[in-house]
Amino acid sequence: DPNWGNFLYDVRTRTTYLIDFGAAREYDEEFVRGYLNIVVANANKDEETLMKESVRMGFLTGEENGVMMEAHKMSGFCLGEPFQ
Image (cartoon, rainbow, N blue to C red):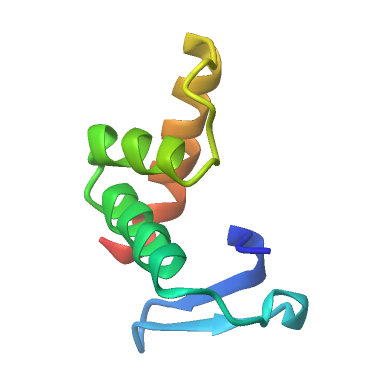
């Protein structure tokens, strides 16, 4: 469950901690690469990459309305702030 709420970021040490061991599992390289692309896109406020990767990975269908797309973008950008 790659849920943002399962991780804690320490700004001082620039370290990410896993705080929900229900999220501990092995992921294949393609998933990890895509997920990290989304993290970087959020940190860089790169809407195009965020949306493209979110659809490609199945987090979005591409059929969402404008309100949902905006909410997805803004929540991602908010969660990307510690990585800027």
